[in-house]
Length: 236
Image (cartoon, rainbow, N blue to C red; front, side, top):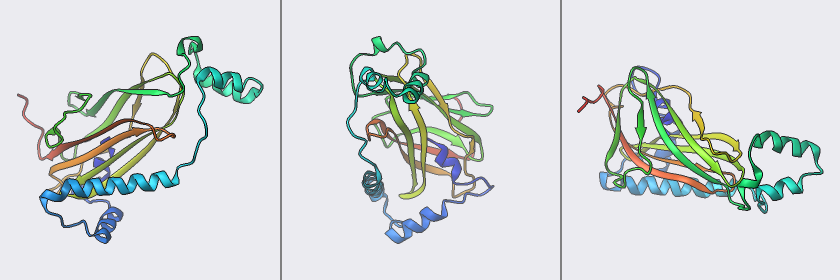
Protein backbone atom coordinates (compact mmCIF):
# COMPACT_ATOMS: atom_id res chain seq x y z
CA UNK A 1 0.00 0.00 0.00
CA UNK A 2 2.65 2.50 0.96
CA UNK A 3 5.71 1.19 -0.88
CA UNK A 4 5.02 3.82 -3.50
CA UNK A 5 5.68 6.60 -1.00
CA UNK A 6 9.19 5.43 -0.32
CA UNK A 7 9.82 4.89 -3.98
CA UNK A 8 9.53 8.61 -4.58
CA UNK A 9 12.91 9.30 -3.07
CA UNK A 10 15.75 7.56 -1.30
CA UNK A 11 17.90 10.71 -1.05
CA UNK A 12 17.85 13.71 1.24
CA UNK A 13 15.49 15.68 -0.98
CA UNK A 14 12.39 14.38 -2.68
CA UNK A 15 12.71 13.23 -6.29
CA UNK A 16 9.44 12.20 -7.87
CA UNK A 17 9.12 9.49 -10.49
CA UNK A 18 10.44 11.15 -13.66
CA UNK A 19 8.45 8.97 -16.06
CA UNK A 20 5.18 9.68 -14.30
CA UNK A 21 5.89 13.39 -14.17
CA UNK A 22 6.52 13.43 -17.91
CA UNK A 23 3.36 11.42 -18.51
CA UNK A 24 1.37 13.90 -16.44
CA UNK A 25 2.82 16.81 -18.41
CA UNK A 26 1.76 15.17 -21.65
CA UNK A 27 -1.75 14.71 -20.26
CA UNK A 28 -1.82 18.31 -19.07
CA UNK A 29 -2.52 17.37 -15.45
CA UNK A 30 0.47 19.05 -13.78
CA UNK A 31 -1.48 22.23 -12.99
CA UNK A 32 -4.84 21.60 -11.48
CA UNK A 33 -6.98 23.60 -9.10
CA UNK A 34 -7.64 22.10 -5.67
CA UNK A 35 -11.26 21.47 -6.52
CA UNK A 36 -10.26 19.21 -9.43
CA UNK A 37 -7.82 16.87 -7.68
CA UNK A 38 -10.32 14.09 -7.10
CA UNK A 39 -11.60 14.32 -10.67
CA UNK A 40 -8.08 14.01 -12.07
CA UNK A 41 -7.33 11.01 -9.85
CA UNK A 42 -10.54 9.25 -10.87
CA UNK A 43 -9.91 9.87 -14.58
CA UNK A 44 -6.42 8.39 -14.32
CA UNK A 45 -7.73 5.39 -12.39
CA UNK A 46 -10.43 4.75 -14.99
CA UNK A 47 -7.85 4.92 -17.78
CA UNK A 48 -5.48 2.56 -15.98
CA UNK A 49 -8.23 0.02 -15.29
CA UNK A 50 -9.45 0.14 -18.89
CA UNK A 51 -5.91 -0.52 -20.13
CA UNK A 52 -5.49 -3.42 -17.69
CA UNK A 53 -8.71 -5.03 -18.88
CA UNK A 54 -7.49 -4.91 -22.47
CA UNK A 55 -4.34 -6.80 -21.53
CA UNK A 56 -5.95 -9.48 -19.37
CA UNK A 57 -6.77 -12.90 -20.76
CA UNK A 58 -10.00 -14.85 -20.61
CA UNK A 59 -9.15 -17.64 -18.18
CA UNK A 60 -12.16 -19.77 -19.11
CA UNK A 61 -14.76 -21.36 -16.85
CA UNK A 62 -14.13 -21.77 -13.15
CA UNK A 63 -14.56 -24.95 -11.13
CA UNK A 64 -15.02 -25.65 -7.45
CA UNK A 65 -12.06 -27.06 -5.57
CA UNK A 66 -13.57 -30.56 -5.56
CA UNK A 67 -14.27 -30.37 -9.30
CA UNK A 68 -10.71 -29.27 -10.00
CA UNK A 69 -9.24 -32.21 -8.11
CA UNK A 70 -11.61 -34.64 -9.78
CA UNK A 71 -10.95 -33.19 -13.23
CA UNK A 72 -7.17 -33.45 -12.90
CA UNK A 73 -6.95 -36.80 -11.13
CA UNK A 74 -5.45 -38.48 -14.22
CA UNK A 75 -2.77 -35.81 -14.70
CA UNK A 76 -0.18 -36.87 -12.14
CA UNK A 77 2.04 -33.78 -12.33
CA UNK A 78 -0.90 -31.36 -12.07
CA UNK A 79 -2.49 -33.39 -9.31
CA UNK A 80 0.75 -33.37 -7.29
CA UNK A 81 1.12 -29.61 -7.79
CA UNK A 82 -2.40 -28.98 -6.49
CA UNK A 83 -1.88 -31.33 -3.55
CA UNK A 84 1.29 -29.42 -2.67
CA UNK A 85 -0.54 -26.11 -3.01
CA UNK A 86 -3.46 -27.26 -0.90
CA UNK A 87 -1.30 -28.75 1.84
CA UNK A 88 -3.49 -29.85 4.75
CA UNK A 89 -6.71 -28.32 3.45
CA UNK A 90 -9.77 -30.41 4.28
CA UNK A 91 -11.39 -30.47 0.84
CA UNK A 92 -14.59 -31.96 2.24
CA UNK A 93 -15.02 -28.89 4.44
CA UNK A 94 -14.46 -26.36 1.66
CA UNK A 95 -17.80 -26.88 0.00
CA UNK A 96 -18.87 -26.50 -3.61
CA UNK A 97 -18.45 -22.76 -4.07
CA UNK A 98 -16.66 -21.76 -7.27
CA UNK A 99 -15.71 -18.19 -6.36
CA UNK A 100 -12.71 -17.82 -4.01
CA UNK A 101 -13.02 -15.30 -1.22
CA UNK A 102 -10.19 -13.20 0.18
CA UNK A 103 -10.69 -11.21 3.35
CA UNK A 104 -8.05 -8.59 4.10
CA UNK A 105 -7.68 -8.95 7.86
CA UNK A 106 -5.17 -6.20 8.65
CA UNK A 107 -2.93 -3.57 7.11
CA UNK A 108 0.03 -2.54 9.22
CA UNK A 109 2.79 0.06 8.78
CA UNK A 110 5.99 -0.97 10.56
CA UNK A 111 8.50 1.81 11.34
CA UNK A 112 11.79 1.39 13.13
CA UNK A 113 11.59 2.51 16.75
CA UNK A 114 7.85 3.20 16.54
CA UNK A 115 4.76 1.22 17.60
CA UNK A 116 3.15 -0.63 14.71
CA UNK A 117 0.49 1.46 13.00
CA UNK A 118 -2.52 -0.81 12.39
CA UNK A 119 -5.05 0.69 10.00
CA UNK A 120 -8.74 -0.01 10.64
CA UNK A 121 -10.66 -2.14 8.15
CA UNK A 122 -13.01 -0.96 6.79
CA UNK A 123 -11.27 2.39 6.32
CA UNK A 124 -12.85 5.64 7.40
CA UNK A 125 -15.74 6.65 5.17
CA UNK A 126 -14.38 10.21 5.06
CA UNK A 127 -11.82 10.10 2.23
CA UNK A 128 -10.81 13.72 3.03
CA UNK A 129 -9.64 12.82 6.52
CA UNK A 130 -5.94 12.08 7.10
CA UNK A 131 -5.57 8.47 8.22
CA UNK A 132 -1.99 8.60 9.45
CA UNK A 133 1.19 10.68 9.53
CA UNK A 134 4.72 9.53 8.67
CA UNK A 135 7.97 11.32 9.45
CA UNK A 136 10.11 12.29 6.48
CA UNK A 137 13.24 10.19 5.78
CA UNK A 138 11.97 7.35 8.01
CA UNK A 139 12.31 3.66 7.25
CA UNK A 140 9.11 1.67 7.07
CA UNK A 141 7.51 -1.35 5.48
CA UNK A 142 3.97 -2.54 4.94
CA UNK A 143 2.62 -5.81 6.25
CA UNK A 144 -0.82 -7.19 5.52
CA UNK A 145 -2.62 -10.39 6.40
CA UNK A 146 -5.51 -12.04 4.60
CA UNK A 147 -7.64 -15.19 4.74
CA UNK A 148 -8.49 -17.24 1.66
CA UNK A 149 -11.64 -19.36 1.66
CA UNK A 150 -13.87 -21.41 -0.70
CA UNK A 151 -11.39 -21.97 -3.51
CA UNK A 152 -7.85 -21.35 -4.76
CA UNK A 153 -7.25 -17.68 -5.53
CA UNK A 154 -5.01 -17.28 -8.56
CA UNK A 155 -2.73 -14.32 -9.19
CA UNK A 156 -3.61 -12.17 -6.21
CA UNK A 157 -2.21 -8.71 -6.91
CA UNK A 158 -1.69 -5.57 -4.84
CA UNK A 159 -1.80 -2.15 -6.53
CA UNK A 160 -1.28 1.30 -5.08
CA UNK A 161 -1.42 4.74 -6.70
CA UNK A 162 -0.29 7.91 -4.90
CA UNK A 163 -1.00 11.57 -5.74
CA UNK A 164 0.22 14.86 -4.30
CA UNK A 165 -1.59 18.12 -5.14
CA UNK A 166 -3.38 16.39 -7.98
CA UNK A 167 -0.22 14.96 -9.58
CA UNK A 168 0.32 11.22 -9.69
CA UNK A 169 3.74 10.72 -8.12
CA UNK A 170 3.91 6.95 -7.96
CA UNK A 171 2.20 3.71 -8.98
CA UNK A 172 3.02 0.28 -7.57
CA UNK A 173 1.92 -3.18 -8.69
CA UNK A 174 2.96 -6.30 -6.78
CA UNK A 175 2.05 -9.88 -7.69
CA UNK A 176 1.49 -11.72 -4.42
CA UNK A 177 0.88 -15.17 -5.90
CA UNK A 178 -1.60 -18.04 -5.77
CA UNK A 179 -3.05 -19.22 -2.46
CA UNK A 180 -5.18 -22.14 -1.31
CA UNK A 181 -8.01 -21.80 1.21
CA UNK A 182 -7.09 -22.15 4.87
CA UNK A 183 -8.43 -21.01 8.22
CA UNK A 184 -5.21 -19.33 9.35
CA UNK A 185 -4.37 -15.96 7.75
CA UNK A 186 -1.51 -15.53 5.32
CA UNK A 187 0.99 -12.74 6.05
CA UNK A 188 2.89 -10.78 3.42
CA UNK A 189 5.49 -8.05 3.94
CA UNK A 190 6.67 -5.63 1.30
CA UNK A 191 10.27 -4.48 1.01
CA UNK A 192 11.53 -1.80 3.36
CA UNK A 193 11.31 1.73 1.98
CA UNK A 194 12.24 5.25 3.06
CA UNK A 195 9.76 8.11 3.05
CA UNK A 196 10.79 11.10 0.91
CA UNK A 197 12.19 14.17 2.61
CA UNK A 198 12.61 17.87 2.06
CA UNK A 199 10.29 20.84 1.91
CA UNK A 200 8.46 19.71 -1.23
CA UNK A 201 7.96 16.18 0.09
CA UNK A 202 6.04 17.31 3.14
CA UNK A 203 2.31 17.68 2.98
CA UNK A 204 -0.83 15.70 2.25
CA UNK A 205 -1.00 12.76 -0.16
CA UNK A 206 -3.97 10.83 -1.48
CA UNK A 207 -3.84 7.18 -2.45
CA UNK A 208 -5.90 4.27 -3.70
CA UNK A 209 -5.13 0.65 -2.78
CA UNK A 210 -6.62 -2.44 -4.39
CA UNK A 211 -6.33 -6.21 -4.07
CA UNK A 212 -7.50 -8.09 -7.19
CA UNK A 213 -6.99 -11.55 -8.69
CA UNK A 214 -6.49 -12.93 -12.21
CA UNK A 215 -10.25 -12.99 -12.74
CA UNK A 216 -10.41 -9.25 -11.98
CA UNK A 217 -12.34 -9.91 -8.80
CA UNK A 218 -11.63 -7.10 -6.35
CA UNK A 219 -11.35 -7.92 -2.64
CA UNK A 220 -10.44 -4.48 -1.32
CA UNK A 221 -10.64 -1.07 -2.97
CA UNK A 222 -9.96 1.89 -0.69
CA UNK A 223 -9.02 5.55 -1.07
CA UNK A 224 -7.48 7.55 1.73
CA UNK A 225 -5.21 10.46 2.65
CA UNK A 226 -2.01 10.57 4.66
CA UNK A 227 0.66 13.13 5.52
CA UNK A 228 4.43 13.33 5.55
CA UNK A 229 5.73 15.78 8.16
CA UNK A 230 9.09 16.93 9.46
CA UNK A 231 8.57 15.12 12.76
CA UNK A 232 6.44 12.33 14.16
CA UNK A 233 3.10 13.51 15.59
CA UNK A 234 3.00 14.14 19.32
CA UNK A 235 1.13 11.32 21.15
CA UNK A 236 -2.17 12.43 22.62
